[in-house]
Each structure stands twice: as C-alpha cells, then as structure tokens.
Image 1 (spheres, each protein chain N blue to C red):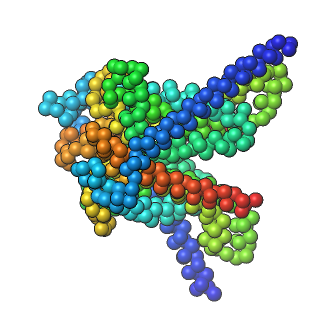
Image 2 (image 1 turned 120 degrees about the horizontal axis):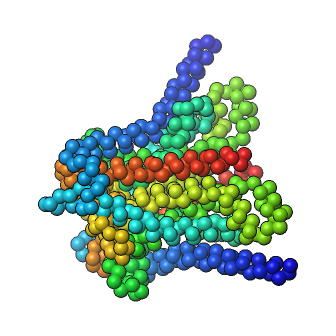
Length: 298
Length: 285
C-alpha cells in the first residue's frame, strides 16, 4: 500500500515538473530572442556607432559606400503603418460600434465570421493583391504612382488589421456595464449621444489598447510591404514612392546570400532588435491598458 | 420636440449608413481579392499543376515540392507545438498558483503572441539553423513555426480548460483520483474539442506564414520532395512569394493558382474548426 502510494506521489511530482518545464518554454523563447538579437547587434555596434545608426539618413549596407542610418527604414515603416492605421482605425471602430449597438443578433452572427475570414487570410496573399490588383487600380487615378509604393501596401495592410481592431474594440464596448447605457438614456440622451458621450469614452481604455496593438501589427507586418512597397530605403515622406520598411529589409537580406558573420549579416539583427523593442513597448502598453480597464468595471 | 426627435433619428440613419458602407467596403475588398485570384489563377489549376515540380517555364511549373513541404512542415509543427503548448496551458491553468512567476509567464505569453513573425525567423535562423547546426532544414523550419504558434495554442487551451465545470474536478478528486488522473481522465476529454479547435486554428496560421521561413533561408527553388528531417524544403507561401516577385505575368498566374490551393486548404481547416466549436458548445449546454 505504502509502496504504491509512493510511486503515485513520485509520478504526480514528475508530471508536475514536466508540465512546468513546458510552461517555461515561453520564457526561454523570449530569452532566446533577446539574447540572439542583442549578441548579434552587439557585433554590429562594434563597427557602427549608435549615433550614426539612429541619425544618419542613408541606409546602404549592401553597397560599396556603406551608410548605416536606420532612419529611411523607420520612415518607410511609419508611412506604411500610418496609411494602414488611417484605414483600419476609423473603419474598425465604426464596424465595432455598429456590431455591438445596432446590428441584430442574426446580422452579427453572419458578419463576424466573414470578418474573421478576412483576418485569416495569409499576408502573402494580401501582398499579391496589393502589388498586382490594388496598385494597378490606384494608378488609374494617380498616374505618378510607381509600381512599388507605400500607398497600395499601406491600404491593403489596413484591411488586414481591420478585423482585429473591430473585434478588440467590440470587446471593449461589450464590457461597459448596462447601467451606464441606461443612465444615459434616463437622462434623455439619444442613441448616438449615448454612444459617443458615454459608451465610447467609457470603453476608451480598451479601444486605445486595440489601436496600439494595431500599430504594433502594422509595424511588424512583413510580407505585404516586402512585396508591394519596394526595396528602396529612401528617407522620404511621399507615399506614392517606393520605400523600404524594417521588415522588408530583413527579407531582402535573407533572400540574398550574405555570409554569416559579416557586417551585412549583422545588420538584420540590429534592425530586428529595433523592431523587437518597438513592438515590445507597444504590446506592453496595450496589455496593461486592457487589463486595467477590464478590472475597473468589475 | 417631435422635430428634435426626427433630427436625432436622421443622424442615427446617417451613422448606420456609414457603418454599412464600412462593412461593404471591408467585405468588398475580400470579394475583390477572391475574384482576382480566381480569375487569374483558376485556369492554371489542374492535376498537373499539383503534381509538377517548379520550373523555369511558367506553364510547366507546379507546386508538388511546395505542397509536400507544407504538409511535412505542418505535421512536424503540430507534433512539436501541440504537446508542449497543451502541457504549458495545463500547468498554468491547473497547477500554478497565483504568484509573480505565473504572472510573468502570462505576461510573456501575451507579449509573444504579438511579436512580429519575422523576429521568430531571426531566432530560428540563429538558434536552429546556426547554433544547432540544422541548416535550412525541414526540422529547423518546424521548430521555428512551433515557437511561433505556441502562444496561440496555450491561450486557446487555457480558455478551453476554463470552461470545464469545477464540479467535474471536485467529483473526481472526491473519489480518490490524483490530480493528474483527474486532469487526464476527466478534464481533458471534456476540453478536447475546444483544445483541438485552437490547435487547428494555430496550424492554419502556421501554414500561411512566410516571413519566418524566408528569414530562415528556406529555398525558393526545390525540385524534390523532402526525404527526411534534415532535408531542404520549400513551402506553399514561399513558392507563391517567389512567383509573385517575378516580373513575368505567366508566373503571376501560377502565384494566383498557388494562392487558390492555399486558400482551399485553409478553408477546409477552418470549417473543421468551426464544426468542432459548434459541436462543443452544444455538448456543454
């Protein structure tokens, strides 16, 4: 009896340990990412000063005359992201308000899965669409648009992140207690007045969290910009031109045969570190906001 | 009074109109995308396209190696990520107490779910391809994708576990079962459809991922079916990327046909997940 009890205890402890080890894999993944990005970027910063990296307006690591200023890649990332956000945020918020406050249960149940389809389409497909359909379509109206451009890529990226903005904003609206709505109605507010002066402000924390995670997605999105925005790291704000984002640069170098250990090879880790830091900060702001505002209603 | 009431309903009508326009626009983009891919790719879709290797000549090129690569990649990724992810979720949901360490793991998983996929590519390139010496192999790709989908599996599994009523656990424990017996024989069977749904959805994300595999250095021209864990490989999204990036229009048609295949596979996976979810919800009620 005692012997079987012992093996039972040992077995339980062993299982507990194994499960805990699996739980730690996520921590190890983060540690791995940080260690690898930092060690490789360290090698890069032995040759290039941080000041040059952050202030030079030329990015030409693959040319004979090498410049290592990340600003052109940052400007490319910002422009494409801004275009995407100006599509995704207004449309996403309006759709979220409509679905949560106006749409009937039946309409909701048909529309949500359709939007989910949009969210489930691989980004490579969106890239194809941006380059071969949206850009030619836009060129009918804007003749000076080059075949690789930030505008088409940004717009398509906006539609890619739209379902996520809509769904997260809807979640934020959903957790607002009914008493707030009823209070507004009791004071004589119309439906729209209730929505825009009570509901949206009450859900603002969650909605902001949705917007910030959308920014993070747009900054990290890769295939759409790698295919449709081009590979010219130019420090410009003109969305009709070809430009290169941080992610597209990593793809460009990965496709080439850059030997391991060279400065060119290390640049992708320096750029990757920059990208990781930006998205890490955005993700944490979003996570904290969402948790804080969920709790405040309870 | 009546007048102001009318005015408000006009504003409401305008808002509704704008909202419906927004939805039409979003779904219109979806339709345009599908129409576009169908119209340029459908003609290329044939058994020969599925069973041929890529070629310099667009008309002769097919997706056999990409299809095989994606298939093996999915099997391997599922075999690695599902057990680890489900175990981690069980640990967090059933074993871990509420302390700073669990909180750290939770925050970390939430953050990992938002890390750009290309960063996972850099991790895989250095950790699996270089340090572990696996090179641009199938197993290196599968390990990279596993780390990528792990947060999705963990989050979905935890949600499934949370829907299992406490009474089931208490009943089992009261009968003298150990904690693990309770979880293995009672909790997991009830949560299984939900867990499976999450796993399928995570796999459907993995099958469309391009950036990490490109970063890892998966080859774009592979004229053979992978024959082992360390074999070089290509995958559907990479083949599509390669064809899309070429200037010739004939290759664009190939890309569209490849996209059709990818979307059909995804549709099948997602329908299966939705079917599972519907069955699951019925059972609990």
